[in-house]
Length: 159
Ligand code: GMH
Ligand code: CA
View 1: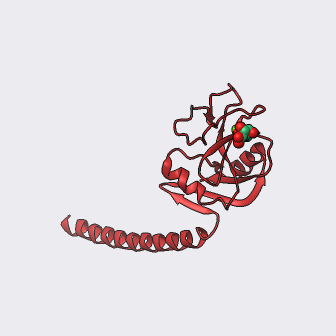
View 2: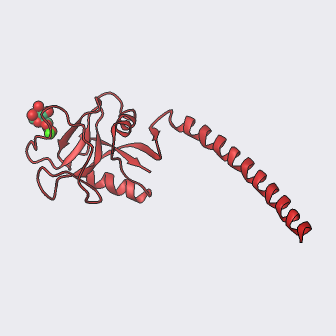
């Protein structure tokens, strides 16, 4: 009957209002946390968050560190992501990117095997100097192909 329907409606309206309040609280919490963490080593761009513990390591160790944490090795897919990633680097630091040409020299693939679509190579790179299959970002935002066993690269993950 109509009475039952309007009671249901009132109850739904109360629930929606309560949910809206919860969402507002959550948004305020998230914004607070983002501000706190972005103070160091965390940058959000679109739906992606780049994060580093400050660890420097090889490509394989970096990959496994990120995967174990439930993310992946940082991999910018456009200019905005590239810039956000750069902001985590301190002066003269470099960071591995989630791509390599280990399968076919000169063909850089994302870690899911798809071909790389966005690049930001430094002039003269990639030069495969003494067989370089990994990629690192310089503190100028530009990319260089580099030896995958170099363990001086900052490990930045994406979530
Ligand atoms: C060579 C030269 C340098 C270049 C490095 C770099 C190594 O040593 O071409 O100019 O910076 O290679 O590509 O990864
Ligand atoms: Ca190089």
